[in-house]
Length: 268
Figure 1 (tube, rainbow, N blue to C red):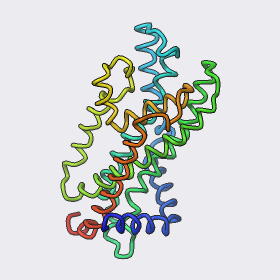
Figure 2: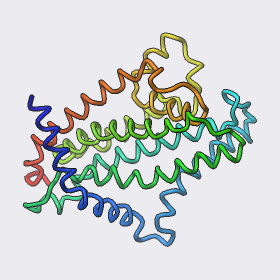
Figure 3: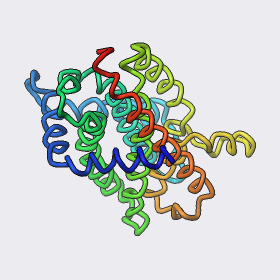
């Protein structure tokens, strides 16, 4: 029962201080690029540059054929951009307590806000990229579809997954400085275990069933389905398993954070 209690207490405290959370998130986003001439433009340059590199290598250099009847950039971009949001935000959430150690030391500050500051800050960039995906489809004359609305659902899936994983990683980082490095290595391996630059149709049935337990497999392919007009999320058998695992992670993350955050000041 303590898992449920900690969940409701923590989420309730975040909702109660939502105005402060919003202001901190905006300031965090601005601070990331405060010392550069182009400012927040840098938040968009790196993902766009990576997309152009892969487009040039596969579609121009290697002259790859269309993937599932779509130009490579149309097929590749949705999965890559949601992966970028996930990996970048998880990394920043992992180190969030150390980044805001000066706030942790304040007696009356709600420490539960800190990981969510990084989460919302990362959302600012990705929301703009969702619009960019529609522009790509327009350029390549991919028709709009009612399935496009699913992008909101899969975006919510990513936020929920980040909430659970981010809280767990943020909780342990003050006690073990190696956690960010471990997360970085796992993300690198997970990138290649997720169908971002490769088509899941190449997998055997046995391997495909195993790979579906990767939550980002579910989200990345779901983003593609949203922009390619394929199947609703409730038609996918992975949906129930994704939400069971994600909800468990959220409960664990809230419980650990609530249990250990009182010791943050002692180790920072």
